[in-house]
Image 1 (cartoon, rainbow, N blue to C red):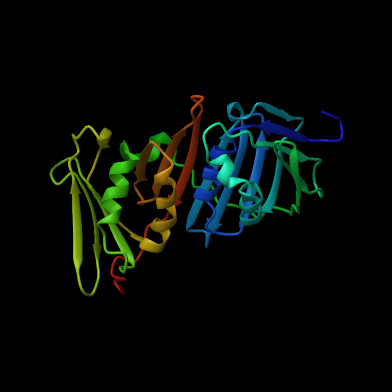
Image 2: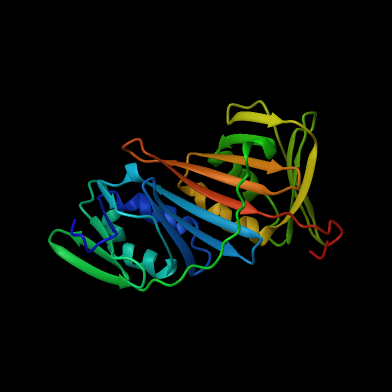
Length: 272
């Protein structure tokens, strides 16, 4: 690495990076934070929904950083660039490799993608980052936590009425323990999940809680289910909901995707 660069990273497992970024790509603009721990790309919607993809240092074959950095980037263009060789990347024994370079504030991010000697060079403009909200759920503030297989949650959400505008989450230490429902003008769907099934690894419910969320905010969070192994649902006293997805690579590296969704304050707003 030359002294000109603040950050240089290389990896061959491009499929995982693309899956992580696609899972949070519901808006064009993302804030990228780089540190010795890896990369974190965060996307927000109207200050009431936030998604982050974590690319840990262990995911990369080479990860050199001289100082922490923060910038805004068009994640849609980044994903488009990385996906140029998707057919090859998604196949067994892919030889597509990635190198990323960044010289610091005011400079673009250079993305080099190579396959069998063919190199694609992309330069992505960086901008001053917007201020993002701190949605962090400290363990001491968590009221309820459920760790389950992503496949189970995907099946449950697929049964709900997609035409509804709201989704209600109910958690209780007593029966019914875990229930997700939607209610529209034509139908009402309630799905009750057993809290002691093998598909649910952890069920920690300290008190009964019922919160309502906009379904359009839940739908983007569903994108991560297809590539993740497990998902953790956590809520606090105010009803802030966090989906944390774990994606384990073939090399055994754990990557994470987090979605924070604020509850609807006016519980009488039922304009489905």
